[in-house]
Length: 239
Image (cartoon, rainbow, N blue to C red; front, top):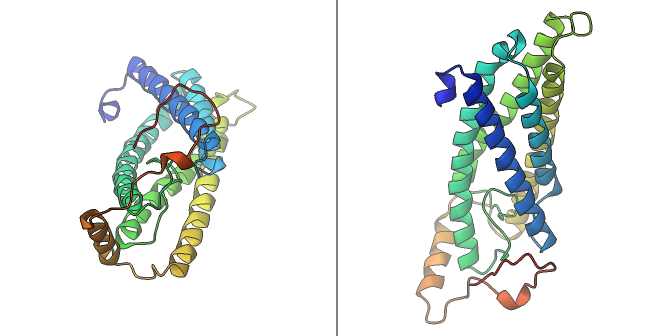
């Protein structure tokens, strides 16, 4: 949020470097999880690679007029995205706790990924509008940068090449995120209908969790014997 009030090239540089580090760690973690049996969709890993490339592009963008025009819009988007990510993390942590208690979730399922087995519930439907707003914000950023590129006659006045590149990347991110999210919602909704989760009320599932936790011999949360890592990364998993 400080980036909205302090216009400093040093602070901007540190932020872009932090983004590069953040998405590199996410890409590495989710590649390891996918290799060891997680259900993470390939698009989210590709999303991290594209985000790394975008962050590097923004890092190399000179402090020119076009950068200044886009700077405020980008950091408003960044603050909103960070807020939505916190909401997603809170929701997925709660979902994974429920599913692991019921013995449904996989050992390699983690928050902030598509591996969390989503059921269309009241809390899920409350969260989705914020996710879609963030995705259409990406489309707006792409359109905004495209207008900036046209306004400065790219190719004649040699506008910064980062402007059209970031515009294209934002459009690709929007298209991939939006279509993948719709596919996931459709898949989880019909799967929920087949399993009897047609209602938006979470009371039945919470009741199941309570009964599981209170029974004399509760269902184990993890099944370590069913999981054997394919690669030796020096990571130990325990119940």
